[in-house]
Length: 280
Image (cartoon, rainbow, N blue to C red; front, side):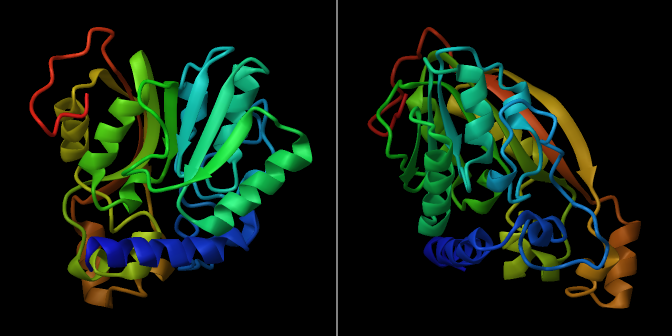
């Protein structure tokens, strides 16, 4: 698919997901709808013990707990990329307090509407949701102390462009904490080409080393993995895309699907511009 076709597919799928509840999404691969008969949440961690958690805003779409690791302080301005129904934004708001500000960005209108309803119901005046593409964020430069994101960049064709945008919107000395899906080894071709597996946060994932390389090449420093866990997709989901022989071969291979939470900083001393396309 072209980049635009991919985005259209993701927007359509997440429009459908916006109308679902967490129980439906939790039994699917990152809410993609490739439902498993095994009743457990394949990717996301349990938010319920975190201060600021709002069940109505949790659609079970994440693959980590970036806000738990993001070192958010009172008064910070925080941007959440792919904010969905607002779950990570509301956790971040608890950390920033009344003196801080949280901006959620999502390109699915149905998600923006649901998130705004959740914020209004709770009277959260310092949380706002902006519709836009995270490859071209509707935010001015050098505005955020912290950027968070939860299982979103794997859905974006131009991941390098997103990291450049993160660099642009962060203040010098700011940092990000991002949870995402990465690979070690190659997925079978049928999984790579499945639209449902793309929307399910798997087929759009790239190699772990390449992912970390994009961060480094953008100019970030202090890069470290804060948490890592392997994702095991149940056989009844895989069998939708792989025949028995392919399934057995895949399970015996060294290919791994991992959720990682990555931290990195924008240097206080910004580098000289590298050319006409430099965004730093």
